[in-house]
Image (cartoon, rainbow, N blue to C red; front, side):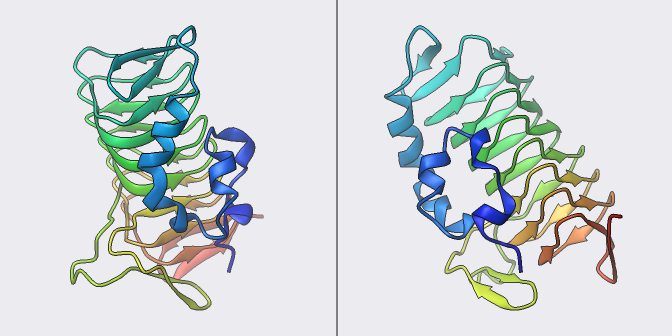
Length: 219
């Protein structure tokens, strides 16, 4: 079951690399994102980053639209676009060359470089790997309806000990439009999800999720 950080994520594409190396599983890193951003922010050069509000750092090459809300703490990386009515609630580390689109909400997340969340996405308590893409309207569901602790279910069940956990997307993952990634979903590198899917558990590297009974490996 490929669910470790080293199996899912190329750490050369995030400012959080040293932090993430402390952990085996990506969900173990979720609790410390707030403090990570505060510590990283203090190291950023004012020649490269503006600070429009306390504990909010925006690279000078990033484009933040006037109606976007940037809640502290957050870091917006180089060449990233934060578009109209985006709602960054806080604890969001957004890498270089990302898109945070119209009406997108982010909360307690790490977005690696090149991540695209361009239209009507909710991403909470999640980590999105290098150049992963969330299709329009796709969301991460981060709390189970019965409020019990999240379990990652693949070949075996792994207890996370967390009430809140969204999804972990490996590098180069494609999520189809209007899909729901249920709490504890793990998408392996280069996997794809068909539009309007309801996904649970672990999808293998290079997997194509058509529905829960039809998951094939890309050839």
